[in-house]
Length: 378
Image (cartoon, rainbow, N blue to C red; front, top):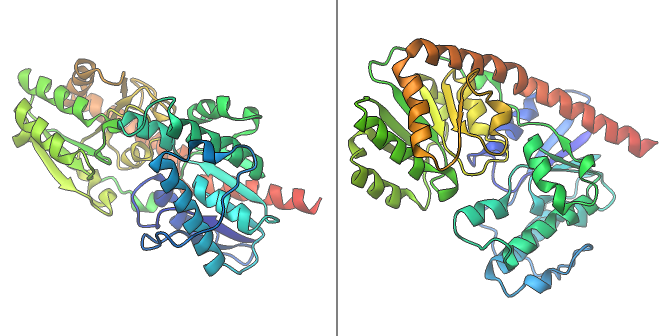
């Protein structure tokens, strides 16, 4: 079977999709399977000029928004690039971004399309203060879900929570499949280590939706209670300067290290002790699975797909978003009790190895692909 994995971002882009799809090629390398990857290079801007028409809604109703106009132009660019670069015949296309799926179905209308939704762009924009809830951009972006449902042979997502989130925007929400992201176990190797001072780490884009401001307030509370720690911030984003200023104002700048963007954080993540990310929204939260495979204790928020990975008190700790005192209490538990911290991290590692291994996810995807091939022949 000739497969095409249609991405939006290049494979080296950090994030859940890039943590999985490039590594799938090795698992599909056999006489039975052939897999290609395709994405839109960053240099392709303003090339597409096609008229855009969707079958389930009129996008021009929202066209006065510059964000909507930018989205439509990006879709045109993806169409232009797809037509320019792809001529090979595929048996099935698996798209991992709405723009990728819509463009692929436009160019290859007779090829079965599986569409996986990995995150909620509109939710992130709302939490980051870019768009208003219920505004033109929000209405446009949630309308895209029904269009994807209409053009896809199978609509999928990465967590039960995100499938539930999509329900109001779909005609047949019960048909949405769920396959979580998978991670190549060979990339994650727990390293025995003994840090005198507990080392906290988070790996994230620095935007309001990730709740790093709440984490800083919690860390200030920990310092007030007399706990020693070091907080490592791996990632970059538009909120960085604001967060650096907040760390100074809260008196935790000396305990906080900003690394900026790092291509392969999994290479040194195993040397830390506690992974913490108080997200305000998360469709799946791939970085929790990556931290678990690195054998770190997990502390996260009770939102989105995170509770599907963390069972509170068993393989990590869950807190409510925006509650810095509750977060400080949870961090205090794992900072003050190394034995408990190890127990949580070991349980997290065992669950991630069994549930989020790339081998398991690859096998689930193969079953899905073969099912669609047999349905097409039937």
